[in-house]
Length: 206
Image (cartoon, rainbow, N blue to C red; front, side):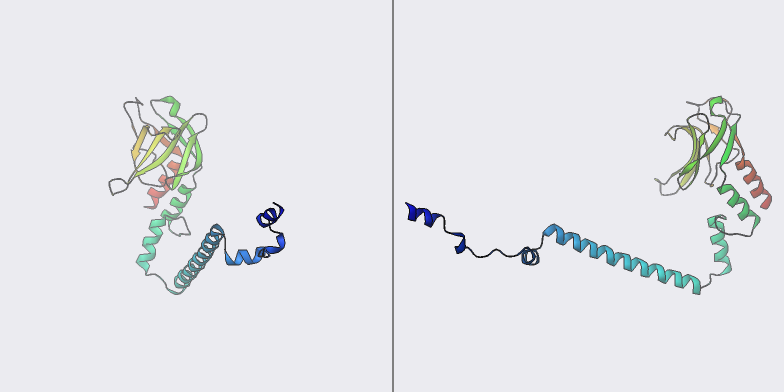
């Protein structure tokens, strides 16, 4: 029985010495570790390619001057957000920085009041009532293939517009508003303050 026991449980000397952790890691890499390393290499390569393309575009921009009409179109497109010497560009730049507007004359008196800038939505400034949950934002519908923009006054950026006006400018227009009959009755609002001032400067420049 002892001999059978020894045969069943040979001494540790009969086993080969286990491979070191380093040799195991090199001969049999962890699949997850390998994938992570490959992803890191791919990400590094993508960053290098992006940096090279950006450098090429920057070099081309500094060595090639655009025609006058192209520069004019670009200036109109950005609407004075970068340096522009025209009066219209200055008015647009001032409008884009409007931090406070005033709503008045609305049949729903709770909508009237001062609105302060509340970040951006749809790529343009949006506003929130200083003492209520009303908000002003621009919404652009692109579902039909053609962008249709509308400024609206909603309850906390909700889906239901209480007042609205079709306009694609960077600021809500001072006039032209209408009320949604189902939720807002009476006279439509008008806007003043920085918005009206910017509109007046733009009209004078035009």
